[in-house]
Structure formats: C-alpha cells, structure tokens
Amino acid sequence: MTIRRSNPFRALHALAIAGAATLASTSSAQLDVSRVLLDARGEAHQIRLISIGDEAIIYEDALGRRRQATVGGYVALLPALPPDASPASMPSGAPIGTDRGVLELNDGQRFPGQPAPTGGEDDTLVWSHPTFGLVSAAIDSIARLALKNHKEDGAAPLPTDRVDDQLVLVNGDRLVGFLVSFGDPVEFEVDGEIIAIPLDRISEATLANPPSPMSGMVVWLEDGSVAVVASLQTRLDESVSVRLLGGQTALVPLDHVRAVAFDAGRLNSLAALPLQDQRAIGERGVFDPVRILASPLSPVDLNAPDVEFPGPMETHWKLPDGAVRFVGVAELPLESLPWGDCDLVVSQNGTELMRERLSQERTRLEFSLPVSPGTLRIAVELGEYGPISDRVVLRRPLVLTE
Image (cartoon, rainbow, N blue to C red; front, side, top):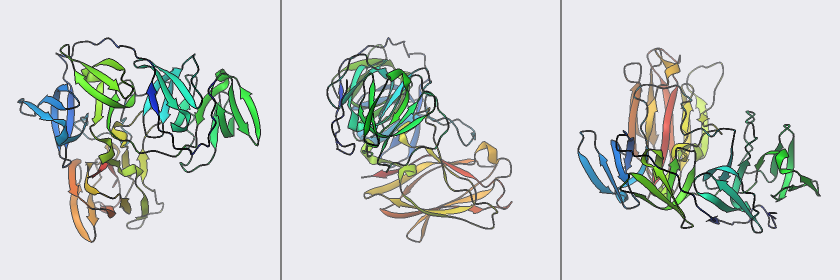
C-alpha cells in the first residue's frame, strides 16, 4: 500500500529507479537516422546521426561530411520535419497505446507501463516500465496516472491551478477529492470520507500537484518515454546506453533515441508561456483563438507542442527572464493550400524582428530571432487573397534562455 501522508502541494522532487531491464538492440549501421541539431543560437542543422553521448556527438552533415562536436555547443536534437507542408495536427511523438498505462510527472517526464505488483514506501509509487524496470516516484511529483484500461474520452484537461485530485473510473464516473493512497484498493477522500476502490476499477488519476520545471539532460524515446538522464553513450554495436539518475542502465537502438534536450532548463515552450492577449485583425464573423496542438496520447518532442494561429490575428506573449532567442518553423498547413497567403510578423519593443510572407510558393520558413525578456508580439496579417485560409502553424516554437 502506498500511503500519501502529505498535502498535494508539498514540493517533493524524488525520482528513483529501483531496478533495470535491458532491451535488445539491433544494428543501426544501415539505418538513416535523420535528425536536426539546434545549436546555441537556435540555428537548425540537418544531420545523419552516427553516435551520441553526454559529452560529444558524431554525425554527417548535409554534404555527407563526418563531424564530431561537443554537446555544449548545441541545445537539442530532434526529428526532422516532413519535407512538405503537413496537416495542422501533425503527430509529434510516438503514440502510447491504450493497451498499457502511462505515468506522467509534474516536470514533463513520462513512463509507459503499469503499476508494479510490489508496493512502495510511504508517499511513493512503484511503476513497472518495459525498458527500465521498476521506477519509483514520489506521489507528490505525479501529474497524471493512466492505467492500461484507460480510455481517452476527449474531455478538456483540467486547469493546472486546480486544488483537488480527480479519479476517472472505467465506467466513466469521475470523483473529485484527495488521493490518500495508491495500492489495491486505492484510497480516495471525497467530502471528508475515505472510500476504497479496487485498482481494476480505476482508469485514470489526475493529481493537483503544481508543475515543476524540467532541467538537465532529457531524452525522448520512440516507446513514448521521456526521462531525465545521467548520461547517454553509443556503444560499439551502435546501441545507446541510457543511464537514469538512479544509476540503472538500459540499451536502446540508436534510432529509438527520438529527441534530446542537452540542457532542458534552457528550453521554454511558447505554448507554456503566458499569452497576455489576442485579437482578430480585420473583420471576422467568428474569432478563433490560438490553438495548442497536442494529444494526450503522444508525448511532444522537447515538450514543445505546435501552436496554431487560425486566422489573421495579433497576439502578445510574456517571455521569461534570460530570454535570448525565439526559434521554430512557421508553416502554412496543408489545409490552408492553395489559397493561404499572409505575412507572419514578429516584433518586440516596437521593432520588427521578422516579416515574412507565407503562400503556396513558400509554405515554410525556419527562424531564429534575438529576443529579450518582456512582451513578444506575434501576428498573422492578411495577404493578397484576404483572410481566407490565412492560418499559420508554428512547429515546436521555443524560447531559449541563458
């Protein structure tokens, strides 16, 4: 029985690994592991990944030349985008099927698997991960826990500032209260009364723990895992040894390393920053607000979901302290073609940092812009054909901090 003794807002940050498993690797010698390297200035470099470690990376550049560089000169590794315009809601990461569960921590870490049959210590959940074995996490560090029998019902997510935990039962009923313990049965307090619910009756638990910033080196794997790691090291057989903070190690094929943030504390998703205001430009019968394109079934590379501007509009975002670059890829999604034609304008302190036209002739542009803390204006302005199909998607937009 896992007993939760503390207030849900107690700041516990423990993530321990109680066991490990080894995943057999296959040779990646013939694989084309195409990736994008983001350097410290936010510039994107198309590469073929050969080897990756926590100190150095070996790759072939766009001209086929082999290069070796220290990871300190880069901020992230991530998959390349499709060569042509894509649908607005293009999948970002590997989907997690509903035949297994997922453990999500409040700093963005994510572990597919299921509850371990052995219980943990007080205030600790033990989770069985298919690659890393038994993962122990403080309950007060958990954001969401979905079991293998869960069903995504399309309901809107709860606000992050909520003060209550929530249980979703397999029959769709929802209970709001406080999770006392997670075992079998699960103990849940509702209106001052503690009720015991068999584990196989639980579909999902969402806990009211405050979000925590992600830091250190973080890896996104093709099985849907997102984990802070102590080290990465490519071996002679071209598998990658992934060592978690608890010291345990697993081997994964090189092409299963989907994305890496070399210093996650420097990466700030635009989608997670405060949107101060937004308004339509021109006459529109219905104003569609900014949309964050993310699915609960798929982890998002670098925890940076795409952001859609559904029409001509002006928005203002609050950038964090230490902000130095705004980077990403702007695209007219497939649904906007062939009539989409608009200007994407980014400005700060009354100065335009970028004004670029997007149309059928150029559906995509990469950008890396110098910014500073404060308010950033992002606008989609009408083009030649008026507001029709003037929608823009920013793919994995990030604000880099020093």
